Every structure is written in structure tokens, then in C-alpha cells.
Image (cartoon, rainbow, N blue to C red):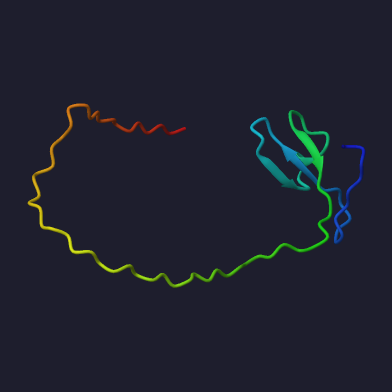
Length: 95
């Protein structure tokens, strides 16, 4: 793909999508995204025919409330801990 030329409309520079070893994409024309950079895979970024929509709106339909059934009152007991519960401590690693 490095031999194929894909240019941007404004500047005319080559444009690639570079993938690192984790598969994360790097976009742009910086030296790390050039075809000569080591340990990356390059795919040409093709021109999109339509501009993607940058925003959208969602309308939520109103929900009808079901009739409230009459519930008998039951005395609440204190919550008991099950004997199989296990506590985990979070480990924070920096760096």
C-alpha cells in the first residue's frame, strides 16, 4: 500500500491510516504515519463520497403507565449477608 498514492484534496499530501501492534489507528501525515516507519501496518485512506453527519436527534415516545396493583404489606426483615460473599480490593497501578 505504500506505493499507492492517496492524496488529500486540500494539501495534496499522501494520507494513510497506520495501525500499531495493538491495532490502534493513527491518522495523519506525521512522520510516524509515513510508509517508512517501522513496526506499523499501513492502509490507504480512501475518499468518502458523503460527509458523515456530525449530530443527530432522538425522539423518545411517551410511555403509558400501567395501573398500580394493590400489594399486601409485608414486614421487611433486616438484610442478611450470605456466607459466600467475597470482598475484592482494587489494585491501582500507575505507569
